[in-house]
Each structure stands twice: as C-alpha cells, then as structure tokens.
Image (cartoon, rainbow, N blue to C red; front, side, top):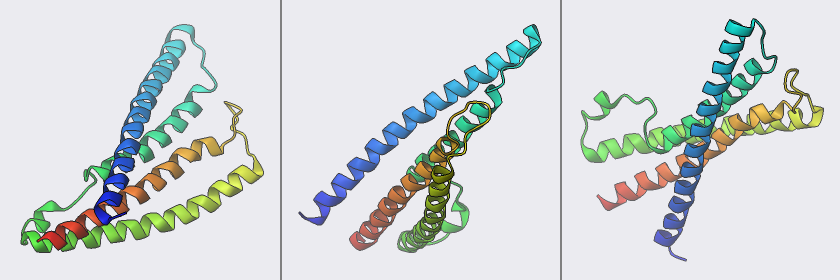
Length: 168
C-alpha cells in the first residue's frame, strides 16, 4: 500500500472521528442547556433543587471542552499567533507550523500517558459520583478521548505539513 493511499485512509478516519465528535458536542451542549434550564426553573418556581443537575452539567462540560478542543485542533482553530507567522514566506510558515505541530504532539503524548495512568487508577478504585451514582471515570473519559483524538489530529497535521513542505 502506497503512502498516498495510507494518508487518504487516515484522513478519512480522522474526518469520521471529527463528524462523530461534532455530533457529541452538539448533543452535550443541548443536554447541558436543558439540564441547567430545568434546574433554574425548579429552583425559581418550585423552590427545590435537583441534586444531580450540577454534577451532570460538570460532567458534560468536561466532555464538551475536551472533545471540542480536539475538533478545533483538527480544523486549525486553536489559538495561534498568525500575525508573526504571516511575516515569513510560505516555506518558512510551513516549517514553523510543522515544529508547532510537533510540540503539540509531544505535549499531547505526555498528557495522554498521564491521563492513561489516571484513568487506570479511577477504574481500579471504582469511585462513584455522589449525585449520579455512576463511576467517576465516565466523567474523565471525555478528557481522555479528547486527548486521544488530539493525538490523531496532531499526527495528521504533521503529515500534512511535511507533504506540503515536500511539494514546494
């Protein structure tokens, strides 16, 4: 199998992952808004509180942030200092972006290794969330999945930058 075909398959995989992630983001946002709205209404009109609403809103926010960050990274929409990069020629910009993607990949690798051991300990101790009564590692699974997705997207960005540099 040649390089172009492998790259095409990897890009297709990343695009599918992005599509699924976007659907998870939309669902998470809708659930968060509905749950928080119901909590506000019950507090305001019924003068009572739903015990699990704050906890599930936090869980959903973690999922939203980390899955959303991975999608933003794939699309190249994370914070960047484009003003300085745009001062250079196209070839130098590609090199700068390649190095930046390598740094991000290194950071995400470190975070994923730490996150993996953290997830293992969460599963091992089987700590339950107080309000929902579900394993706490479900909350952190969104964090870990977002980091894993970032690994894929960082790898794809590095390959794209290398191909782009090579074609110039």
